[in-house]
Length: 437
Ligand code: PXG
Ligand code: PLP
Image (cartoon, rainbow, N blue to C red; front, side):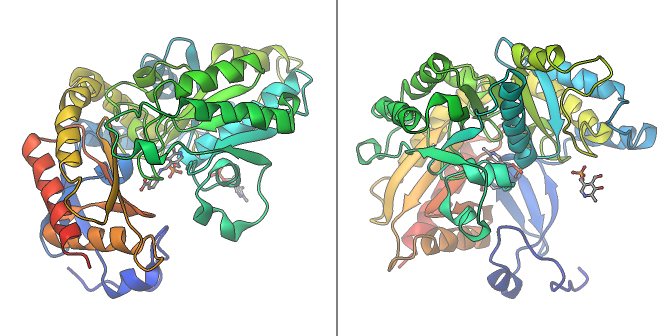
């Protein structure tokens, strides 16, 4: 390895000062393993950043990307289009709940969230309900980093520095004391959805465009919805003429052992957002999938036929190379029955993860759903993040890439994970926690 100059690169969501003293550099990836610059194999326990469920360097995806780059590297997205945009949109709808069949492509999950929020506001304005502009998110929600997303988001640290955002209020989160160490969906807590009624009383439904939640909160540390909770949110939104948006950037396309969180939990939103797994992380891409009636409203209420119905889009919307990657990914997801595989192996993961309960006084909660898991650690002298951070560093030294976020150690295992690897990573985390002081 040539010596790297670390100065110029400002790393995202990273403690740059600490990192540059002790950098962790990945130089290759294959299957479920990275190779670092010391030549070590490192198990990827977060599938990249929840992106690479199929594992790294899948030949079919690489082939599709290379071929597309040679055939058509870029096509403008406004007023012209390329075939794979239509093909991918159509293929994606076959993975979606019944009725969600109009796909708007974006460049990331953050873009997908802000696009969905703009579509929601515009949808009401087109119907003469221009006051329906407010959004309801949820405490601990993560909806990316654009201004819309941080406004509905509920992770304090991601908003504090940035000042005024979009008008939004927040539902309480569902991590209650009585639900600690629940396996899968907690039994208690559906009543927390009724807080939406209080927010409707406060703001009036005539000012609320949409409710946006992750069906299972990911970034905040894997918080599965209490049984009946999402059903209740759906009922209240329908009764009060408020759109329901599921942010499925993590839960979409297999993670929960179903094609979507909507399918896993049996609740259909009006729009859902996707990103990450669409291309298996190989190309930046996101999407909003909307009900046909939402799309049709724009078609019906936008004046003469040459008028643009939705003045919104990105230079890289439906990028040909991302679309080519996406088509290859959907082929593999389907052919290798990945959501089914996730569903089949999830109970093994659940058992191994929860075996850590009681192994350390620092472990204050464990949660899981599909191939996602979170371990909450007790704060140290008022510092909530130090222990998960130390666990992640220790795991890296042991040959495991493990994600820490806030007071949680998070796992998002590759869909292809083997039982022996589940045991190995849980052992490594257990050892790392035992070494804490
Ligand atoms: N919505 C949700 C639900 C997400 O999880 C985004 C939007 C934003 O997507 P982009 O592509 O703009 O990053 C996300 C992203 C973690 C972690 O450690 C999670 C995300 C990103 C990075 C790290 O949990 N989620
Ligand atoms: N800023 C400027 C000056 C631009 O011209 C554009 C796009 O043309 C953008 C920002 C938005 O970039 P993107 O379409 O990649 O989101």
